[in-house]
Length: 363
Image (tube, rainbow, N blue to C red; front, side):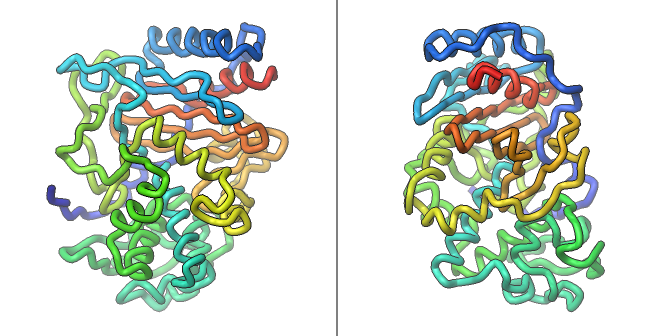
């Protein structure tokens, strides 16, 4: 399998991988009464998602868990419509921007190993770094507050990155501006600090230890779900390998559940004292942007996670690629989990998750 080299273009990157947010009004509360019986609850959730599937708003896999117990894991629709292959909890999907939390974990692991600090300058790790980028730290990149322009760098043979525009949009740390380029730069930092490729470092230090056996780098000949424009289309979307980064990660609902559970474990990957940086509000997200579209205020970003206002009680991240939508939502105090991996674009992930949460917590 041979990776291709890609030019990162601003217009493509903006559309290729941003948090998956459904452009819908605040969802209507569910009409069912919550229940604590796992089997009854699973049936209620399944009925909700089946209805959305039948209405053309959900093709994919759903996994719901609470307190370490999987309540429902179920596939809906076809992974490959031409070959009549159904979606199952073992179906592999590109996770899109959910990949950012694996990048963040790798940076924290390297910090724990003494190979870098999140306060280090980007220019300590990237060759030919523009002088204007010297104030940019890894912390700024992790929190989308670097000011690095979206049309900044492109890949050349040998994975070198050269500056096209060396002027920052704003002073690092001044404000939040979601940036795929910033996380692409962190991929290069991981390679420089570890002496390994990005994918091999993640495989050796995250996926293998957690037995995420169906998670890895997405190549064109991997057995992944096909992506579609909508529920009616039989024409698969062209999967944009390498557009979001020089590598993309695929996973399954079951492996993402293993990832979720590991984040509760003491010292499983990192001590909780080091891991807490991922879920600590690091940068305020402007009201009305991304997950604040429902009118909620007080959102922030940690390292690889959007953090909801405290009263909402969860952290979340989604992803968008041509033909795919993904989302992981963690209610950390209640150990609640909602994973949605979908292979068409006409989905309503946020409203579905809101209704499922109402069932789980009796809201």
